[in-house]
Length: 89
Image (cartoon, rainbow, N blue to C red; front, side):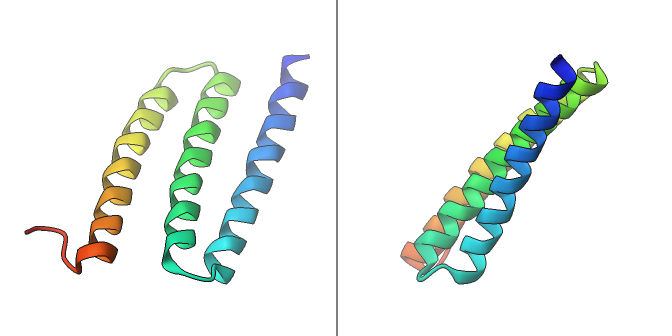
């Protein structure tokens, strides 16, 4: 039964990734694209955790933590670049 729930979750998060890619391609401004990129990072984290559950190993949970840290820093850097024109003052 757990395997069916994992397949369903993989499908939902995969569909969410496709919708976010559509938002990046068709976003009316850069703020929508930034939010879509941040949501893609969240979906990738969820997919890594689900894959770790499916495989039964903990290495993917550590990879999800690394993706979360890199995703946060990249979102902040991109927002600062959009607002100020540079990242480092």
